[in-house]
Length: 252
Ligand code: NDP
Ligand code: 8X3
Image 1 (tube, helix red, strand yellow):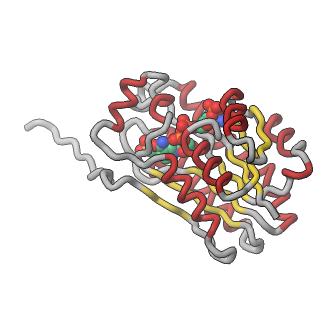
Image 2 (image 1 turned 90 degrees about the horizontal axis):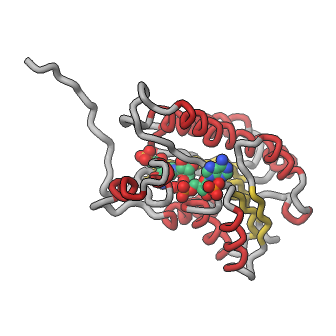
Image 3 (image 1 turned 180 degrees about the vertical axis):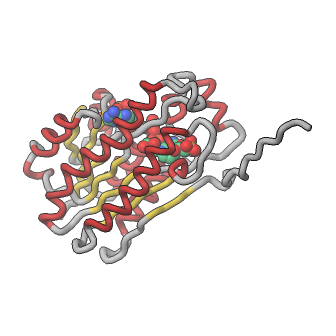
């Protein structure tokens, strides 16, 4: 039987690459994002792929619940949920960061992921089949200046993923947390509120991870034998490593 994958944030970056990767494997797709035109374009460019799409802001709990509860019959049995929609906003220190940016990150990266998971899970438990794949980040483990709330939202994703596995231990449902490092997508343009020049500086002189690299990993975690659960994949480009501890020294 054809498998079904629901991908949030399928209009760009990792989500779009996952849509293409799973389509190539013959899966049927449920694609969401706020930019309707991009979802329409995907369908126009992939006429042979079975797609159900919806303009959906994951921050809207009512819309998320309605969307899942009203899925067409043939799309109701979701095999894989990729909780990918998310963003970083700003890189200022905590003392000067924009509180609206902080709220948007919490509402999207934490609450949106919660709404999707809580609404999709009962069906998976009923069928005793499914896989929740969350997009965490290395920022959920390693601190860096300006990551403040963004990193904290991804630390939530890390612990939530582990706690989900605990709740689901008596089921065949799998939970994976993918934690990428430096990856080039629209992520930095969004983070710098549309400043493409600033965003380009992030990747200058590096060979970052690509969305296709992440899609390959997401596909891989679904393809291991059903009794195997890939808990966490932490992945960085070769040009990246963990920062040393920072020590501030007073001038003598
Ligand atoms: P992109 O900016 O390219 O894509 C982000 C996607 O999230 C878009 O499709 C966007 O769709 C969607 N999205 C954002 N806010 C909402 C919302 N409120 N409701 C619905 N969809 C939303 O970034 P990436 O592909 O790089 O990021 C994907 C995930 O991976 C994020 O969770 C990010 O934190 C994480 N990540 C990214 C890394 C990187 O360096 N790029 C590294 C580690 C993790 P639309 O605007 O159409 O709604
Ligand atoms: C994205 C990776 O290092 O920019 O989650 O926070 S990083």
